[in-house]
Amino acid sequence: MPQMKKGKHATPALMRCPYCRTELAWGVIRCPKCNARISYGCKVPITGFVLAVVVAFLTASSLIALLTTRDAGGTPSISDAVLTGIGAFSVLLGFGLWLLMIRLAQRSASFSRSRRLDQ
Image (cartoon, rainbow, N blue to C red; front, side, top):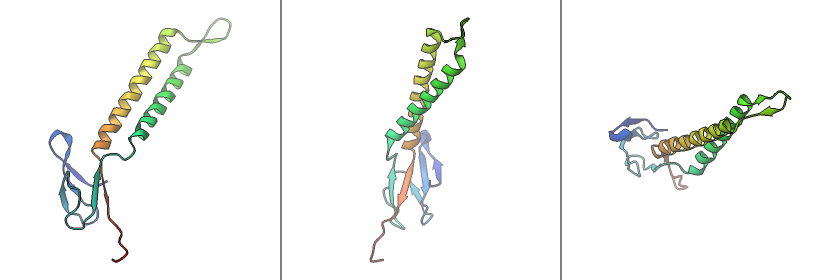
């Protein structure tokens, strides 16, 4: 990831090209010195959503296992209120993680150079 300096509203104001070390303004699509192409944002945003769902599911499963009690007969039981709380917590956790990943993905920039056979 390129080195960046912060600007207004937490967006990077300047970044450095990893190939030629030129200072570039956020938003340019090519480096003027080495002609590297710059792309912004995440290429696969659905991956972040799937990861957030998996983390929320694993958290809910762990909380259910931890909060389950045994009644007098020895069978495991859990109250409906606890299940509802775990479900709400898991949904909010997954949604929060997904929003965080979207915000981080919008601030990412990747550089690539074209490889030509005639060079």
